Image 1 (cartoon, rainbow, N blue to C red):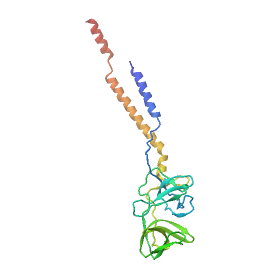
Image 2: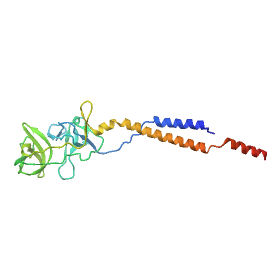
Image 3: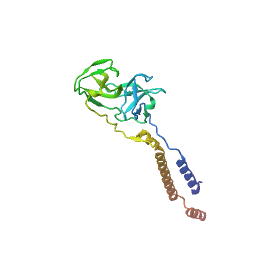
Image 4: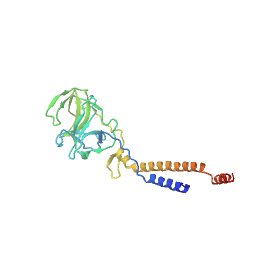
Length: 246
């Protein structure tokens, strides 16, 4: 027969085992991987050798990872909803800040317009013209690049992707993505997801404490039930004496 002392020892041992258990980590499977642009010189290229630049990606926005490798990472930039083309290219992986979540509205949706008529070029060297863009024409903006003394905007207009001189456009600005950008102690930029992941141990301690409290309450409840239904020694002795007299 298990005495109360043995029962209490067993319950306390179970309690301490629960406390000592490592925290349970829940990993959510996700087939999509994203990275954030947290440097000013993140260039997307046509080729995996990173020799044919397209434009510099706007700071604070995101790219979707298509294929990872040591020398270059294949990415996509822009929604694939058919409103404007999705840009697929390559980037230096050192220019990316990888994240562990799927961002909301990861890409910019910026429209710009011409202040004066200009020419849309196929290449940033402005050697292969498409056609002219009249005044007050609206186009989608992706990013910028510099050729010699000119800043060129990479845009989508009249079913063509190409470059137009920024000076020909009405003034505009590219707002930062609304997701907060936090800076680490060494001055480097980081996104909120990585900062939050570093605070996981404190959350794990909280989970262990919750388990400990639940186990402790369970022990108290079991102890109360034990005392309520514990057989009385006096009553048992009286019953045995009465049985003997009979």
